[in-house]
Length: 352
Length: 202
Image (cartoon, rainbow over all chains, first blue to last red):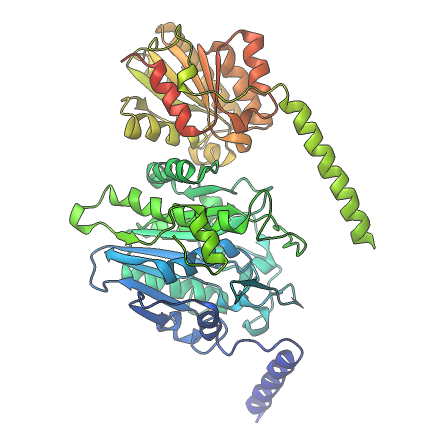
């Protein structure tokens, strides 16, 4: 009886939370599918909950898009939307899902790792933001996961699961930052379970290359850069040079260390995966200032950021291919040749 | 209302910042290309060459890939080279810029890195090597620590190559003029590589 009352109380709490806020997506998976332009080129789309059943039907589930042959020897993994407010990476992911074709190898893409951050629900304030592009609506979402459906309140502070003993604790809300939770756990928070599902996916597909698309503020030293572990610096350096050459953006390289514990590229690198974090400059960060014009910002317009992400992906694949056998390289077509191609796409015109 | 006032103040502040940059930029040098390398310098730097960082910036890895993979210049490389490693070199390339992440990754304090660079420079000079300083990391490789290491390396250099974004305030222009060191300000990292290629003896 006591258990029954507790369950009823929990259900009432969840219901009141739902009534006091915009209706959440029934599942994160459906929410992302609803805004993602899928093309016939995609071989398969499946839910991330295939790798962690606890995510099924929740706001935390998200689509995994597979392009190319399931039997290919080499796979490139691309993650975007870990932070729902870093929209250039998300749009780059959508470009790939819509426009790219894998001629050889396989590409596995998570365009919104943080599906629960689709709605702008952060620090317990709720205000949805939509960007309309070419008649399509895209959510400018949250950096963190949705607190309303988490298993517990944020802790006072948070330490990534595999951080060294002397790691300085992070703010408690970072417990809902997927990119501090790798490799994740199936018995911890929902945020940690998302990270765990991604890790399980990686262990199954065994990618030779993994790229995580993010954005940083003007004040961050990470804006316009590729960050990687020391062992993969040369591979990244080649891509940095080519990205700068092809986009005209002054791009730089950063090497990571233990302070990046819990970050995707740092933890994926421990699995032997050549892993890279790509950062463009989001002019509205760090506070997501709604007065900043994302589309036409003078310093960092959205089309340029999407273009740079796509060229970074293209050149990191090219750089990785240099060390693969010719017959086993990953060949992807459909990346934009110029920024005009991205501009046309964002405005709904036929591109290039 | 407060937001509006803040916004107005912010705009005035932004205009002031732009004006200050414009004034500072007046002393910065216009970007050049490999074609503008003075004849007296072209082809005067001999092999074998060695690349190391001064400040543990990962830009050193970029310069290595540029010089060796793209331009096939065949430099030896060690981001934290010891003095004995450069003893056989006839050209030493120092890639300038302090990186806290790089220093942490190398397990070095900034002071230890300054000491290492001083010893490397001394070893190169003893061996008769000429020094090329390169700064390719833009404004993110400028700041108190970076400036200190730049000030250490510029006076001992035979030529300095800088990607213009790192010289917006004319810091390199002023420093090179003070020590009478030839300066090549270039628009991109790729062009920095082209200048390096022109400087090297065939």
